[in-house]
Amino acid sequence: MNVEFRDTLFNQAKSWVLEAGANIRNKINDPYDIATKSNANDLVTTMDKETESFFITNIKASYPEHYILSEEGFGDHLTTLNGTVWIIDPIDGTMNFVHQKKNFAISVGIYHDGVGEIGIIYDVMADVLFYAKRNEGAYKNDVKLAPLNPNLKFEEVIFGLNHFWLCENRLVDEQRMQDFVRTIRGSRTYGSAALELAYVAEGVMDGYLSMSLAPWDVAAGIVIADEVGGITSDIDGNPVSMLDKSSVLTCNSTIQKRIINDYLQKGKK
Ligand code: IPD
Ligand code: CA
Ligand code: CA
Image (cartoon, rainbow, N blue to C red):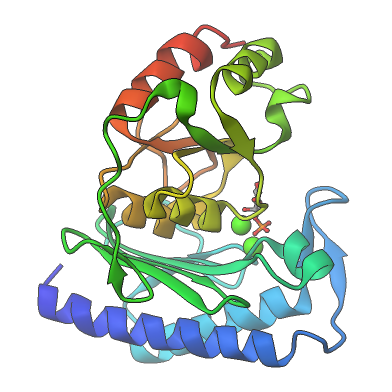
């Protein structure tokens, strides 16, 4: 992607993200409808839909040749990543939005021919913006983020995880994952994959692991983490698909190898 065009696209995307975030903040105490999707804990609100529609309307008006992958179904149904694709989660952390009125994010990744060019993650209530452009570094509120520490001791890392190590899951033996959690220093669960990837990029967590996420959960976070030397793969070490659900592991390459070899592969079901 041409760098000048990418700058224009980034500025436009950033201004829409900030506008959408301000709209959510303004309406945070207004009533809204809640519905469930794949299961009783998979929530969607009228605010998720309103925010997604805002992006779709603007993108289609300004960039009719671009494609959109988005969570709530107003985007395109894509089978390839050819061309320029916006990958949008209008509210990542809907459960936090509903129960806490904070700790949720707008996540926008822009990919060109399958390559992540732009990542934007906006912590709406904290008004904190993480962003990156490929090969230009990652930023938190316009302050450049430092590269990830390559020399972390495995026993001292903090990892973002959700409950798959407590409850049965399809992919990895829970006992093995409990060994992992006991070996590292600590685990955290924030309820927004996008924010958790941003925290890895910021260095306040050392890694993030999920057994199943959708492209819109991670598209922006992968671009941001990549700019500070974070590697993202599935639990087999393969690249994460932007067209399908996938397990997701993001951390530095040394830790990635150890987790995959010692825990994820040995515990594979
Ligand atoms: C969810 C959050 C959560 C993760 C779930 C996602 P949503 O996204 O990122 O942290 O554990 O798998 O579905 O539904 O709030 O956009
Ligand atoms: Ca999400
Ligand atoms: Ca969402």
